[in-house]
Image 1 (tube, helix red, strand yellow):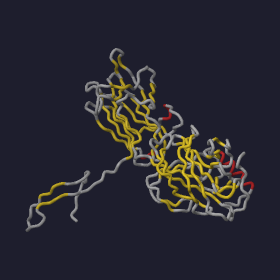
Image 2 (cartoon, rainbow, N blue to C red):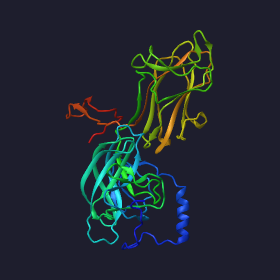
Image 3 (tube, rainbow, N blue to C red):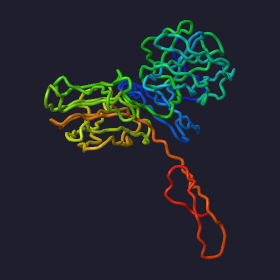
Image 4 (cartoon, rainbow, N blue to C red):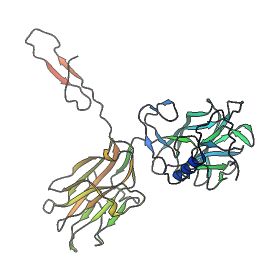
Length: 411
């Protein structure tokens, strides 16, 4: 394999002194490890990297455990890095990276490097960023600005070392003791994998992305039910959720499911309308939708809103969390808002189930959205006339507030 010879232990210090037995146990343990969970950072944090950083509204993605185990000899014309699955982040941009490197006592610090950003599915280079220099020895390079590059579903980020010599190139990326299959060594001529089945652990490289805030789903059904939504006719009567173009909330279009169909008769529906996978980044996410019965005379349609936290595939039996249900009453469209805070930092599937209904008419749904709650800006402003006089004094107030403040206070 190219560039896979481990460095001799000639660094100024070792991260751990570990016995052969402990090393074996650690390897056995790491084989069962999973990818580190993607998480959103809102405040300053002190991490294993021993540095205080502000990331505000950026999303950090990493597939390593944060502990530098060792490194391998690196070569010129190779790239060393990680492939990130960004398929669930619509319109994301690549903002910055961090990576951990060591110099193993080499005296020609600092080290020069380039950054290659690659569409891993097509092996096409998206961007080459040049002219970088390391700023620290045997530690994390942090906050390396990428410049808001549009992400693709499978984005590879590779460091090209430019310093020292062709068979012992620097900066030298460290890797951890586990193996999650996200790190690669590539030939920079064509971005082919130089080391399939990389067996040295995962490179300590973090990606920070920006995900536009933060309407994850916004569907008005003007073009029908989207192809990435899932319909399940659980009762098997061949009738399911369908598009309807006569009685939408803000326009003519919505979706419906029936418990009585003209020409067919009464039904006992058990129909699921499943949204695409949702990444609930924080506890400020909400589901909002509009609902009504089609008929004011046959209105008692029942429905449930259910969650599955098992997201590798969609199975009815996985929708075990009931977060809302109701039986409709006569009337026009009503908005329902449900917090998803219980699922913060989790991936979920969300489903509407039309069930426990018989011989009524139709339930209608429209304008379904999943979004991050935007805190309304409040400005409790007012004017008063007159502003001075002799007691008792009658004052006329004019409300000039922004938002909906509930109280005012003299300053």
